[in-house]
Length: 203
Image (cartoon, rainbow, N blue to C red; front, side):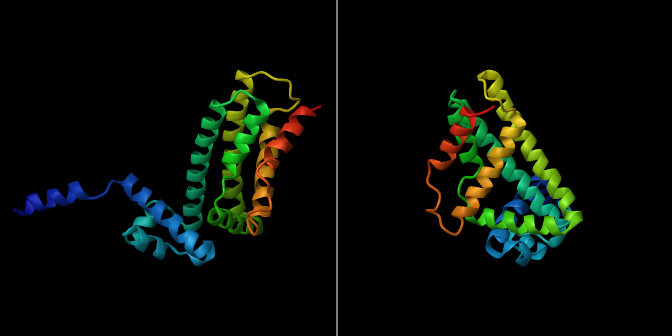
């Protein structure tokens, strides 16, 4: 094989930037889940992905930025799951319960990571800015889905999509915290019953 042809093969087989980014994110999820946010490092993520640390930093400026990208990917997956759940029902309490289930589906490793980063964001104003922006984006995306459902299935609730979204997210996080150390602490019907009562008694 000539040198030119060998170089051509190298170019063709080199992973594209989006492939590198996806592999880094996948590796980061595994490393963070195993070691926690504080115990993880970009070196470990790079090794798990099969790249140099430079490949990580060419896509993400810091470990914080890498984690926030994971949060964004998680939010995208959950919002898509919410949309699928809402498409399967026209009942408002059932729909809201479906939203809550999709946003709080059991994932102890991710919940622990979220709490660890949440503490970091609360204590560090610089991290808090990016974290807050990420949370606002998630609330906005969920609220848009809920608002679209309410427009397609008009009911008198007394609640707007934004406030409903805040309540749903607060409930899901609170219930997740209760079930994290004790998985059987929260009965399956708690979320549906709370939301049904909430909507039924709306002002």
